[in-house]
Length: 355
Image (cartoon, rainbow, N blue to C red; front, side, top):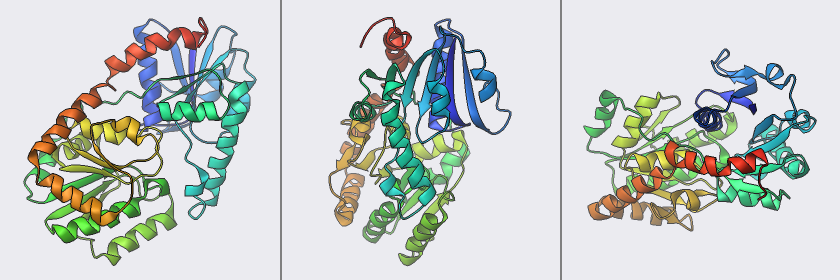
């Protein structure tokens, strides 16, 4: 029996979706598995069991797949289990990004990094969801490592009515998707857009994602928007359905990321799959995720990036080239392609062969 442990399971979270995809892969191979979580949001979500129910009567022949992304007391319980243990590492944001925003989050990130090193003797195998993550695993002392990327859903049907709200507009639409976290550098998105809008007033920025988690950081972002007098030109959408998000990706002219730390970054793949060109700051796993299918900047010269965006919007041939490369890159993260990698890794996961 395979038991996937996800400390906190959120219905639409990337880590939780990864666990669901792995369960589907195991089922396709005729292997029974369960997903358990200490916290499940929303409560009663089908297909996910509480922690105690899952970890009772663990046998030596069972395999634990532990999804790790921040400090958790569960690690000591996992360490004591008598079965084979495999970590799936989704990355832990360095504490420095949160030191001026949330002491609690900074401590959790710092302690999580300490756990990552301590867990090197606990887990028989550690899987990074990117090469970047695998390198962090190796640096933390894990000697047996592999890479298993995330599956990114790229065929979500979109809401045509929602899409038309953006297609009917003459404005250039820049998009960013993700929670407002300090490492995402939402303030730098605003600064780039300030210059974009200065160059071309017929432009707008759409920010999709939760903006309530760290109140002081959110307040600073909102203050910056007011300082630049961009309230009418930046639309904030805290929550959105999957069909509306698919429509927004397909209706947007450009996806923009100024993040300074990512372990994978699913929205980049979603954007490329939707034929939305990507411009991003080169940091963390972003170069690996984007590969050659987007435009990456080495430095944050905001006016220069804005001028690059304007040049791209005037170059239909380059846009089309990026769209084609993006679709091809995104296809590498389809269920079919990741499933092939999973089948190759399965003997390692089961301990039937050495790395």
